[in-house]
Image (tube, rainbow, N blue to C red; front, side):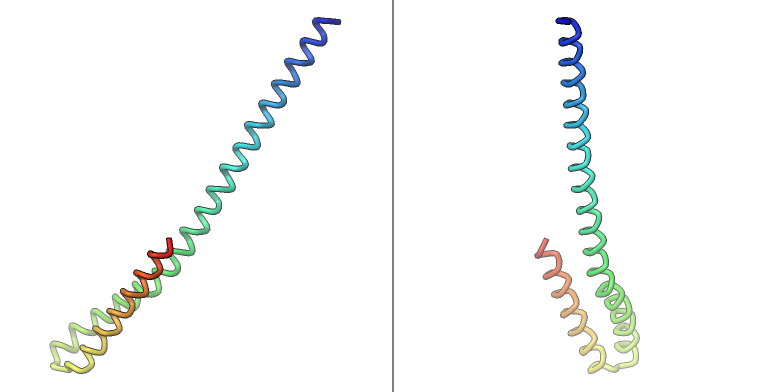
Length: 93
């Protein structure tokens, strides 16, 4: 009976340890999921201005080559605004 009680105590401790390990793994999985969602959101927020920067910078070179300085200047101001926007996005992290 004493041995049986000891065996039950060992089983219970093992079950508790298994439960704690499973709980820790769930907490870790939740943290990783949150990080994944955050990184997806950040990538989405930055990809739009990056695409615009790519287009605007390419167009600006062509406008400069044609002598369209006003249009090139407007593009550069927009590029500056987009860079500021991206800076604000990363500053919130």
